[in-house]
Image (tube, rainbow over all chains, first blue to last red; front, side, top):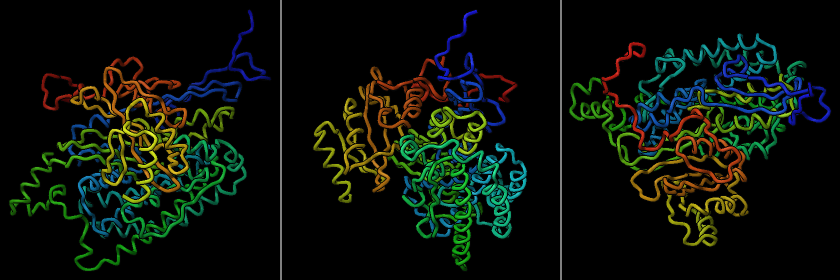
Length: 408
Length: 167
């Protein structure tokens, strides 16, 4: 039999042919439903081809029929590791279109929730990087604090993973005392736990050798690939939507944007690590600001936007306007002003953008989600080219690829 | 509008003149519409000119306006100058019968999947794209689902009797 000719084999390879390996769609290391077809020369990747779309749910089409408040549930299912962030981003987009101004207290409460969501997102990502490098302990250890974050969500909105939290103009109800007690517990206990988690990894020889220098992308390439979020910052570019285009009163807070230098897996890990500390500091500042509201001000949890914010049930029974608004909102009969608006928030993975076009109807004429994950995943084949398979696995998790966000 | 936006308008108007069909400023973002065959030239100028410097591609997407005859499909580019922190939106309109536009993949690697997505859902043909295939939908699909001629299923329909899906 003649030797098989394979043009993809690099020079000097001892193999006779490349091996094709399916990484995904359902592989424990992808942590989501997407596929990589790897062309392997031994353990080395010659070529990688990514396929996405396995859980495409046509959110952009569905949104064209829904009134604004029903679209919140769609945003939950984008990056489901930080659903409240997406919810808040969506509400703010609507508020921008409708011209609703939120009170400061609402902004600060939102900041608390958004930063908690960022922490839970980064916590999962970083602990999964640990799992994929062979350290399961950290993952299980910090998971109980994600549980605590979810309990706070539960206190605020009643659900945990796909939260559907908040409304256009604010929150559906004021934060309960239990929510604040749990937040205090989190602020008190989590830093120590996260410090321990850090100690497990940041100076760990095995971890460093698995992550340093692997899965690197240069700042130029990252920019050219439209990277955003921690992945871009790990490459050394300090772009953060919270600072570049402050929303929800982020300009009132004091925090730094951590940046890396090499854009490799270790830098991504470290940037997320530091962002957790920054988020904790932001939450503390926000909680202080929230506590400073006294008397009737402390009861403010939504903006005065009667046409979009569901009235109190007692008012619905006794006041005619409230009844009308209640009916119009619930039935989705509120017409939204025509216009086109782009609003972005700093999601767990980067710039989460909402491009909303309204023609004056009851539902958006067109809604497009700028999903950071979808955009940076296309760089994966370039990043893992000529690296080892085991490094590609770590790269996969340290990029924090969330299938829900990729497919929309 | 600040002086910065004036500079941007000036530079673009000088280069393209009346090929720029409209200027808008909705919700604080400078937007302009240009003739479709000049999209790549405009993107290149926006990228290269030191006073513009829009070197970050935020997003590419499509819109379908079935009632605009001869300009049914829009392609919308969102660009960002990260240094001066200015965003800009560029739009082009193409007829649904001949939805040809030039690809931006030569300038931005990130445009690759964004354009594939736009092709996938609107059928915009990006000339020069290295790998213009569907990205989210199945390869066998022979229509472009986000176009307006495909309505969502009627929520009140009762002709389906499917025990599995509980209707």
